[in-house]
Each structure stands twice: as structure tokens, then as C-alpha cells.
Image (tube, rainbow, N blue to C red; front, side, top):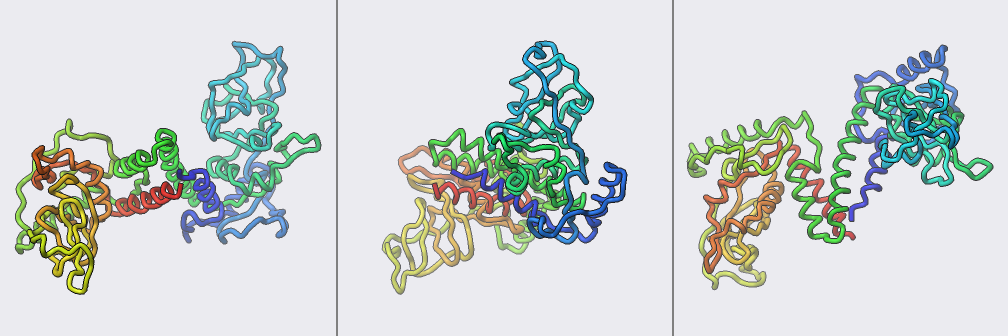
Length: 455
């Protein structure tokens, strides 16, 4: 299975080392941000008080190492007794209310005792498990996204309050923070004290870069959450898991959608323009109009910058040519070096090619009709194979993966020798992403499927 936790750790490592997103020369130095926050919080000019020996690793020049007390404040929570609990009191957040980095309210304790203002949670506070018998639980945290002054927090909890809460939250989840600043006290009860939180070091990027980092982390973690869900559902069937990963990929669930990619509509128009140009000079046949897409045909929701299209609108499917069995040799020899593809995939080798380049090939005839193969360089396609041609730089591997997901065999005619009609395939719907995302889909799938094969 894919080790998503290891991937998350790697992403956080890159993020906190300045390697996840590029630095921008237009971003002001983070020292200005730290100085502003520190002066506001502490009432005096910021003065960095960090020895070189304390700094764990090098960071980009525009970043600033500082202490947490320079960018936020902390408080330790409420102490209450069993007799203070009540069904009608104020909710108290405890360690058990932090599950997988989120606030969970399925197990609540309420109290009626007096609560000071600094023992309530404010919106966007980072709630941290500050003390526990198990070191693995100490340091787990979540961002409180509720309404201020409605939830208090318990004595074994700490709160860190900062305008940079999302970036700091991810920092608290890094091995660097947990390794360097979470330790055992003399009673062997692990704890994160106010002093530890205040004195802990944190690498601070410029504000705009922080926003880029958080955005990138959340996009990546969203994809990994999808992988976790799929792996949990199909843990005992690797074949099904791979199939579900591919389905998720062509639905836009494994990749982030980026504004700089443009839209699939723009790509679609480029494809139509190229097709019309090639048709005018006789390089491809003039195509018959395809039916308009009705709302009831659409099988699932796709990202906003994608577009539902029919296969024949963005690809050209061209059947190969007949050749006799005697011309096809089962193995390579000096004369027969050209791969030959038929309805069920590779048939053997021939002496001449009829197609050049990198193409997906659809098996058109035979028991395995609808199968998808790829060929690169010179090859021969028989009349039982359909060669796929792309336009405007469409990614051929993406096209082949998407065609494979259509389960084309279901459209075969039910006769003694099953077969597929090209005009039927042309009318099938596929979701079209922008070009850049097509490549990301292919790259992401390759990594995930490779990881599946390693287990």
C-alpha cells in the first residue's frame, strides 16, 4: 500500500525548508513581519536572541528564525474536578477531542466551575496536547474553528494564538518541532509547557510565501486523504485499489487544479482549430458532427476548469490496414523488426510499418476488444486495431488511461467475434482537463501505482 504518512512528512519537510514552493523576489523579508508582530505582542522593538548553535538548519535568505513568543501568545488550560462536571455546563476541550489533526466533539465534557477569559478558545487558536502519559500523544494539535468564548480547554492542554496560525499549525506537526521541543519531565510525564512553547524556534517565511506553502500543503494533503479513503475501502484487493486510483485520477481527485493551467475549454478550441486546419489541407478526413451533450448523460462532477467532450471531438481514431498471417512473425529477426498490433494487442513482428510516433492503440476486434496498448516509433496496426491520434499537445498517456477507464469492451457487438465500431467510440463522453493537469495526472498516477506494486 502507499505510505501516505511518509509522503505527508516529506511534504512538511520540504515546506519548512523552503523547498516546497519557490521564493519570490517581490516578497519582503520575513524579518519585517516578525518585527511587527513581536513589537505588537511584547510592546518593544524586536531583537533577535538566537545563538547560531541553536539553529537546526539553513533556511532561504528571505526567511527568519525566531522564537514562538515573537509571533504569538500561549496559555495553559483550566483545572477542574469531577464534581464540576455537568450536562448543562461549558464544553472543555481535552486531548481526546483532537483526532487526526481536527477538532472532534463526539466525546464531550462540560463543567460549571469558574472559567477565566484566557481559558476559553478563540477562533483560529491552535489547541495542543501539552501533557499526557504517552509521548506519542503529546504535541498533537488542531485549529479551533468555532465561535470564541463557547469552548474552554483543559489543564493538560495548551493554546498558541497567532495571526500565522495555519503555517504554525503545520510546523507543530513536523518531526523537527516534536523532536527538539517535546520531552519528558522529571516525573516521566511528557509535557509541552508555556516556557517550551515560548522559547521554541520556528522558521518564518514572508507572509505571501506562507500562504503559498499552506495552499500547496492543503492541496497535497487533500489528495492523500483521497488515497487513504480508497486504501481503507480496498485494502484487501490491490487490483481494485489500482482501478479506483485511476478512476479518481480521471475525475480530477488526485491532482490540484491551478489557475495558471487555463481551462479545458481553451484547449478544446485549440484542438478544433487544428483539426479544421488539417482537414482543409486533406491530412485528415472531414468529420461528421457529433451529438450535443445532454445533462443527463454526464456521469459525475468534474473540476470547474475541465470540460465534458465526446471522444471524437478531441481525438481521431483510425483503423489500421489488413495484412496476412504469413507476413507476421512471432519473434524478431533481421527482416521482421516492426511490432505489429491487432485486436488483442501485440501479434508479432513485420517488415514494414504503417504508423510512426507515440500512440495509444485500441483493440477493435476479438475477445479482448477494447483493450488499450501503447506503441512508440514505427509499428504496424492491422485492420483489427484502432490508432489514436491527438491534437494541440494532448497527452497521449492521459488519453490512453482515460480510454481504458471507459471499459470499451461493454460497447462491443455481441456476435461470435466481438467487435467495436469506431463511430460508437467517438460518441462516448470523456472529461477533458487542461494540458498541464493532464501531465500531472499521468505523473501522479505513475508514482502511486508504482508504490502499489512495491507492496
